[in-house]
Image (cartoon, rainbow, N blue to C red; front, side, top):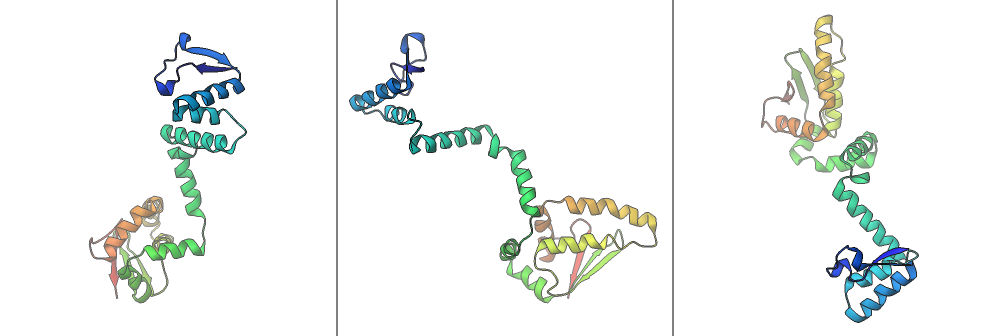
Length: 202
């Protein structure tokens, strides 16, 4: 049995006992259908169609209402923690199509540097130097990997090598937007260094 509001809530009716009656689903649907025919209230039209659970109309609108509720309450697919996790999983998947889409986001100046210039990156604090030849990298992800690899060149100074591992972890943890933004400014000479790294472009 369904609770039926004699004066519907959408038309200002209260959710009080005197305004309620019990109807089976067919009678409930019919009550709203008849009311719509008399008063032409959209709420009654929706209610009469919504109560027919076998219709595509019901299924679509039920899905819409569910999505709207989840979005408002940030649950299910709209949960920020879930979105972050899905983003990390998606980012970890490698594909040529994804790399090409990232290439399109590069400015012409940076693309030209990656394609035609020799870059000498230097981390003065840890005495690290890496030379990247023209055409070796295409996107920032490649640059980050090259810089991370430079920390693995174990020097004879064990203490220095051990000190390098913490900033290496920090560099690996930086979000892609923050890494891209910081190193873009270095490449464009808008800042001298990023995370200890400076560059000479030949």
